[in-house]
Every structure is written in C-alpha cells, then in structure tokens.
Image (cartoon, rainbow, N blue to C red; front, side):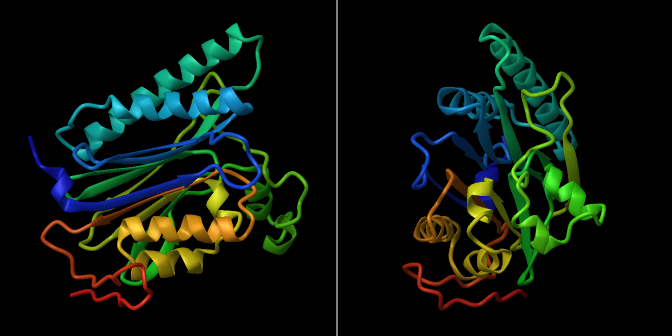
Length: 262
C-alpha cells in the first residue's frame, strides 16, 4: 500500500450559514486514496442532506487504485450508482427531486483528474496564480458562454441559480472531467457555491497562497459568514508536496507568507 497521505497536506471547513436551517453540504478528504470532494445537496432539508451524503459515501467506498485512470473509472462507477440510488429514493417519495452537485479531485502517482457535475467548483492554484478548472453547469453560465448575457448581467439574472446537471436528477449522469500532471506545491480548492456567492477568486487565491490548508479553509468560511452566508458553505483545500513543501505559510492564520517556488 502506498502512503499517499504523506504527499498531501489538506484541510476542510463547513458551516450551515446564516439562513439555512440544516447543512446540506458534505465533503470528503481521503488522501490515502487520493480523493478530495464536495457535494451540495438539493431537494430541501432532509432530501438535500441525504443526497449529498449518498454521493460522498459512494466516493468513500472506492478502493486504493493502481493509477489515476483506474481511480477515475471507479469514481464514475460509484457516482453512477449514487445517481441510480437517488432516483430510486425520489421515486419512492413521490417523484420529488433529490440530487446533489459534486466536485472531486482525484490524485495518484503524479497525476490528477477533476470530476464535476453542477456548480460546486474546483480551482487549481499553481505558481501564485489561480485557475478555475471546473465549469459551472448552470443556465446562467451557458448564457454567458453563448454571449446572451454579460458577466455583470449574470450577477442579477433571476435564474442564476438554476443547475443544469447534478447527481440524482437525470437517468443518465453527465460528468465533466479535466486531467493533468501534478506539479510540486499545487493547491486544489474545492467548494460549494455558498463560498463563491460571497468570496472572489482573488480572495480564494490569497488565502490558498498565504495560509496552510486548514487555516485557509477556516478563513474562507469565516469570510463568507461575515458577508451574510445565505447558503451552506464548504471548502476543501489540499496541497501537493511529495518531497516536502517549498511554500512558506503564515503562522496562526496571519497573512504574512509568500509563495516561494523552487
């Protein structure tokens, strides 16, 4: 068994927010299997919480792979099973919608694969720059991509929260995938839309660069809470350091560190 956990320093934080009654987000940090994920449930209260839990439990059951390709295959299979399970539960409950977004980073032996469905996001911070790897599966994102709406108009568009993909909503599960080679000191940020509603990409970058993963997660959730937290918020951050980090992080969450690649 390979000790993958030593190659990653990870953190996670979640909060119900200031409006919702229950936290319908769920997350997974499993560095020994190379799996990091966030799911955001929908369907209202118990249904949303159930959906996100089903998705995360499905990923938790993935056995140690021999390659990132095998890990990706198993991830697809498990999410397909979760999709079927949620559709069955929804049918038993009278056809209500019980679904969840999912955003997962799979990492194994120097390679990564990002998998997502819905509007939970995956960012890659590399050499002091941030890139959104995932693409939101929402009506408003599609309209912006088609040039129907500007980014500014999208902020106030009434259907901006309508999701076009999720686990448990359609009989055929659609997942997007992005793959690449890991570089030393890569940082992945995975989050529910409760974070990105209130916090900018630049602020995510600042926290990921300046603070170690757990402190960065705590800081981003705290910032969301300060700004009203109209939804549940969940953040998972993992830092890839296979032979020791070359990044000097601040102590006690103070923003004093610098990104120092070698």
